[in-house]
Length: 240
Image 1 (tube, helix red, strand yellow):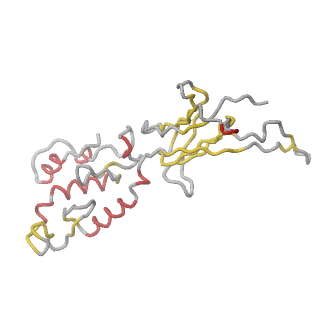
Image 2 (image 1 turned 60 degrees about the vertical axis):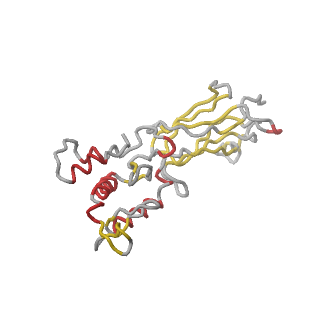
Image 3 (image 1 turned 135 degrees about the vertical axis):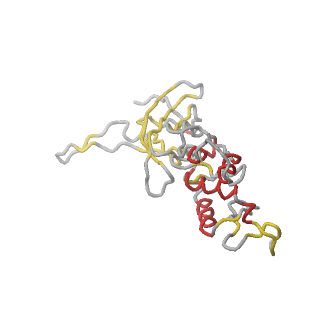
């Protein structure tokens, strides 16, 4: 569950008897569930420095954030910045606009770093289509064999902002009827964010001649269950 148990955290820090371990309060550090567009990739979880703070961080950072939130009143003192002036050794965290929880300079630097990496730590499940053609087959004797369909573009499904692991791919007619399906393993690739992939489907691109889309491609991140948006394509043409 990705909701912060602030009351339990505060009680634990103030020394009250609480039976829930701190490690459980931090929640699962994985994307085992679809939490909408702010779903974190595996290994990260919402920071929740405030009620709507969905920046994805490590479990250790979230645990420290809970502790800092619970201790905020003890670190404030009246001063030049008002009643929430930080005591010596602390600075405002500034994890979001108006965040005046006092933390160590290292914790504020961590919040700034996490904010900068927010987009790449979410399962945005971005999908796009490219085309490819099949090159002639090298016969190994200085000759090559080609077919009449080698020059016809085929659909390649590409994606990034997925978890590292299995992704299910589908091409369906707009009616919902399945035309093609496959799987691919998303992994790290230079220039792409989080888990990425490129899958050659072998499916002919039938959009030539300005024909409108009659189907769509879509991908599902297996770890989180999160779906990509539907990308329009044209399939099912007769190829000689």
